Length: 268
Image (tube, rainbow, N blue to C red; front, side, top):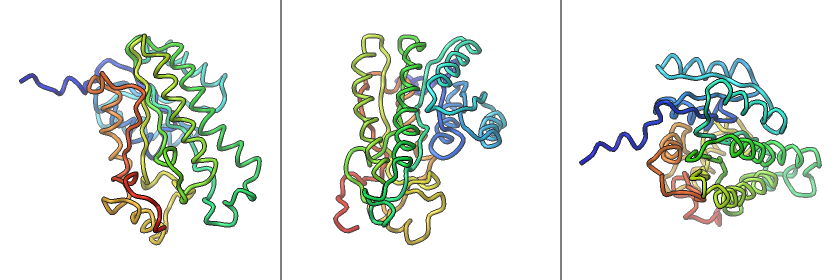
């Protein structure tokens, strides 16, 4: 039987991961680099972004950095054009940049009457507009056969009392954006898919960077596997969607949630 490792080999390819200075994005960038891709690490904070690229290089991988705001269409266009100018190609793009978008309605400040215009617009810009900008510019320069991945959420596939209105709305919109773009780009062999992570530690899900033991247990109680996920546990699904292993997969939403979508939130 043929060796299947070639299905996951990204040697000689170039990948851009937005929002990759921490959390899921960082884990994805590291995983793509381990598979042989040159990874362009994106973030807004120079030190954190540089640290991810340096860590990839120290592990034997290849990485560079780009700093800026993915919600700014002019910046995204310039950044994507810069990647192609420097490396001559862009094979994989992961639109991962985003924010938690405020607390859930289980708190007074998270109820719909309390959500400010500024908070709502900020969540739209950072989650949905940044994704749209990234997909538009990636599809413009990407060669046939490229791969696009969007980080959505299980909160985009159902109601979720643990997150805010802006988050669940933008994550749901990302799902249909992926499905629509998958149809458009299919004739070019460009595959467009989404990840739907469940509760992952260290990603500011629910609006908190460091979860209290009580809140972490509340999240764990919604997951059949009995715990929150770790950022590194998203590496495999990302590599699957970024590689030839998923050559007949497009317009799909892949849950990475420990079985959370199979439970209701009735007991929250």
